[in-house]
Length: 123
Image 1 (tube, rainbow, N blue to C red):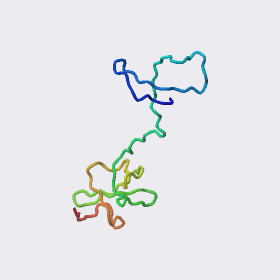
Image 2: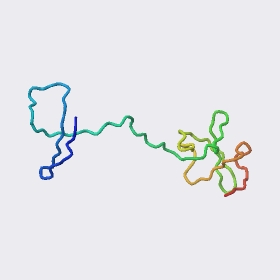
Image 3: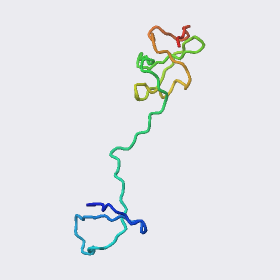
Image 4: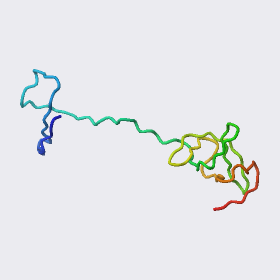
């Protein structure tokens, strides 16, 4: 398309445009009318789906012996869980499995925690 003429015919629901062709076609003559549809530009990259899983602070994850560990706090005791990690997103670590939404996780002194240890929580 070369230009859009800045007027529209409301009675015919048309807009006049000037179109240029890279290859001349002898069947196309001056003042011919045509019905044209313009396609939207393709996006350069498809949108990625947000990562699935639960977001936790990165400091809640302890890596030990090739495993990723998270401590869930329940009834003032910690429960050690091996978790499967996804990507990091918006400053948080995505946990794909091993923890459920709504569970409280420990975020400090992880190296001092062990399964079943009694803890005092701070809000």
